[in-house]
Image (cartoon, rainbow, N blue to C red; front, side, top):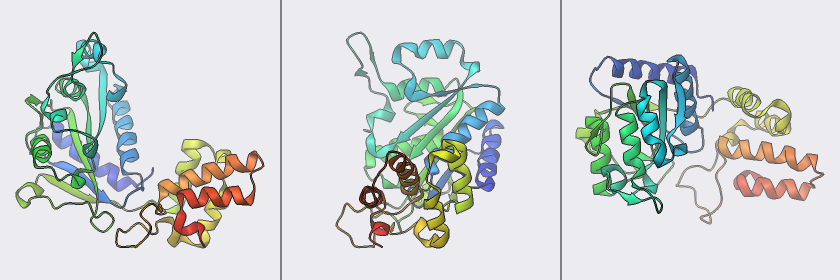
Length: 281
C-alpha cells in the first residue's frame, strides 16, 4: 500500500544510520488497522534489497534444511521476516529448539536469527503494543534495545522495524514502559489518500481487476474509507470495520462477481461481509 514518500524516506534514513553503527533506534509505525503498514514495510524491504543489489528472500519460505545454504552465500541475500508477536511464544525469540519433522530438530525463529546475524535484512515486529505478556516483552525489548534475538546479535546490515495500532483503534493496546520509549522512533501513519489507493490497486492488481464503482462511491463519501474502526464503537463483536484492506477486498470481489453475473443481493452480501457498517447504508 502506498503510504507516502515521507515514510519511505524516514526508513531509508534510519537504515543508513544503522549501517553507520549509530545509536540503534527502531522505527515504530503507529496508526489505524488495515491501512497497509505491514504491506508497506514488505514493499520497502523489496525495494531496499534491489537498491543494494541483493536477492530478496522471505524468511517464511526458507526450509530449515536450506538455512546453511543461505548462510554460505550470505552476501547475496536480503532476508525479510514478518514477526507477529501475538502469534508467538516467548521461546520463539529466546531460541529453544522444537522438532520440525522426523529428520530435523530446529527452531525456525532461531534460524531467522542466524540468517540476520550474517545477512542483510529486516525483522518486522508487528502488533508490538498488543503484547502484554511480561516474558514476551522481555524478549522483544532485548531485540529493540540490544539488536539481539535471544543470544544471537544481528549484524549491522540487519534492520528492525515495529508497528502497532494506536489505543484509539484497539482496546488491546498496552503502554510501553517509559524507559524503553526512547528506543523507538515513533512514526504516525495515516490511511493513504483515495488517489494513492487507486494507483496502488492498478499497480498491484491491474486496472481491469477491480470495480471502479467502489472508487466512485468513496469519492462521493470519502469518510467511509476508514470508518467504524475505533474500539469505542459498540457493535455485535464480529462486524468488520471499513478499512482500506476491506475496500481492497470488496473492489476485487465485486469485479469478479459482476463478471460471473452476480446479483445485487450477492454484491450486498460481499459488502456486508467485509464492510458491514457501510453495507447497511
